Image (tube, rainbow over all chains, first blue to last red; front, side):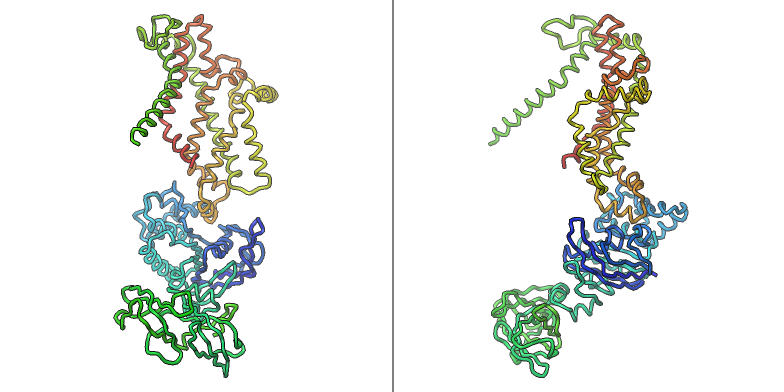
Length: 363
Length: 273
C-alpha cells in the first residue's frame, strides 16, 4: 500500500522565507497525480519534501500509513526521476540502473535479472553498455526511468522529466509514461509546469500557486469547473477568455451583467453569491464561443488575427472597451473570417463562468 | 584595420617568445653544459651550443652517486605525498563544498589564511613536532607536512561545488551514504581536478629540496633533489657532471608532465569557467 497523506505541510527555508504554506492532500494507492503550477509555486519543493531531500518545517507526511518525516530518502520506498536525468556520467547504463540494487546488497544474479527486465520494458537493452554521454535525450530519459523501475518502488516521483525533450519526443514519452503507469499500477506523482502534460497524464491534478493548493480534481473537473480565476487562466490552451463585467441586477437567481462594450448578458447564478453593482469576470473557453447572427446575449467584435492550426483555426477578436483579445475556436471552412471582419459572438449560458471580485467561481 | 591586427598579433608573439626564451634558457644552458665535454663553461661570451657532445657526464653521475637509489627514494616520497594529499585534501574539501555545518565559513577562512604564510615559516615548528613524534629521518617525516595545503583544498572544493546537486540527490534516493556519495559518485567526477592537484603536487614533491635535507640525515634515504648535490663534493665541483645530474633529476618530471598535461589543462579549464 502506497497511499500518501500530507497534513498541514509547511516549509520555511533557512532565511525564514516560507515557500509552502500548509498543504493538505491525500493521494490514493496506485493513483497518478500531477502537481502543476507556474515556476516558483513550490510544487518541486513539495515533491523533494516527499522524497526526503528537503526537510519538513512542520506538518506530517505519511507514506503507506507510516509517518515518514524523519525517514531517510532511500528508506521511503520511492524512486525519483529528475529533470536533468541525473545519470552518473562515469557509469554505464547498466551500472546506473544497478547502482541502487548494489547498495541494497542484492546478489549479482538478482541485480542482473532486475536490470534486464527493466531494460526490456523500456526497450533499452541494446544501450546497457553505453555511457550517458553517448545517449540521446530520449534515451537518457528512458534510462532515468529504468533506474527508478529496478528498485520496484511503492511510489514514483517525477520532477519535470520531459522538459528537456523536444516537442515530438515529449509526446512519445508522455504516452510511454501513461503505458508504464497502466502496467505497473504504482502510485506516481508528477511535477510539471506544462498544463498539457498535466491534463493528459494525471488522473488527478493539483494546481499550485504561491505555495498553496488552488484546486484538486480530475482534469475534466478542473477544465470544466475551475474553482477560481487562477485555475481558469492556467489550464487550457488557449486559456479561458475572461471578460470584465458589472452586475446590474440579480432577480430570481438570474443576474444581468453589463460587459465593457455595453452588451448585456443574462446568467443564472445562486443569489447569495453575487450582489448588484459587483465587479465580476465572465469566463468562457474559446471552443464554447460561437460566431453567429446577432440576438440576445451576444457580443459584437472585430476580427484582429486568425491563426490556422490545421484541423481548426483560432480567431482572435477585439471587443470595445477590452484590452485583451478574445480567442474563438472555429472549424476550418466554416464561413472563414479574416482580419478586419465584423462578427457577433454568441456566449452559451451553460458554458459561462462567473468569478467574483476575489477571483472565486460563483457559477 | 588588418595591419593593426597583424601588428598586435606580432607584438603578442614577440612577447610570448621572449617569455618562452626566459623560461627555457636556463634548462638549455644546463643541458648544453651537461652534454659538452670541451670548452670553458665560464667563457665570455658563453657558448650556447654543445661542443664535442657526449653522454660521458651522465655515465659519470651514475658511477659517482647511487642514482637509482635516489630515484627510488624520490619516487616513494612523491607518490606517497600525492596519494595522501589527494585523499586528505578531497576529504577536507567535500564537507566544505557540500555539507552545511556551523562554522564552515570560519574553517574555510582559516585554511585560506594559511596561504599567506611561506612554507619556510613552518620548518621550525614542524621539525620540533616530528622530533617529538619520533619521525625525524623517516619518509613519513618528509611527507607528513606536505600532505595538506590550502591551494589543493581550494581547487578541490571548487571541483565538488561544480557537481550538479541532482546527482547527489539521485544517489541519496538510491540509498547511498555520505561516504558512498563521496567515494563512488563525486570523486570519479572530479578526476580532471584530482589530476591537476596530483600533477602540481608531484612536481612540488619531486623538486622539494630544503625540507628533505632537514628531516633526513642518512644519504641512502635522500631523494634525488638532495642526493644530487653530493656530486659537488665527489668531483671537486665538476660543473658538467653536476649539470648532468640536474638534467637527470628534471627529466622524469618533464616526461610525466608531457604525458599528463591534457588532464592538467582540462582541470584548469574547469577552474576558470
